[in-house]
Image 1 (cartoon, rainbow, N blue to C red):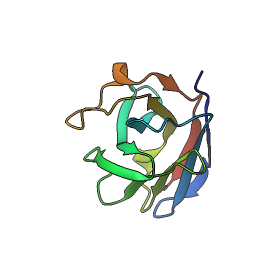
Image 2: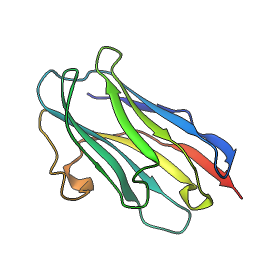
Image 3: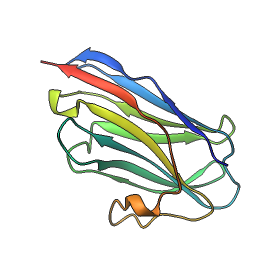
Image 4: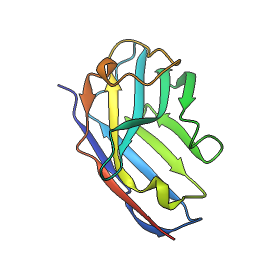
Length: 130
């Protein structure tokens, strides 16, 4: 059973940076899809970034338009860890950020489909002040 644990959230001022981490209990050697979703207060959860991987290699990424050029998703399969580097943070980035994984298969990178994800973390809170 895959366990995902997020860390790295916190409170920063607008323009600042944070790096979120997601530790997984077992990344498989077959194709995987991992991603970050977020839910702001009073809003529905939305996709932030996805990455398809096999081992050490990325096989494509997808970003929400609102974070393109500011956020970078990456993974370290040796450490079983997924990252989200967030730069130039804005107050509208304030949300609970969730790590998610789809085991053994790639994600369709044309959209964010929560139903495609098999495992979820409990989230880490990011608060951006103006």
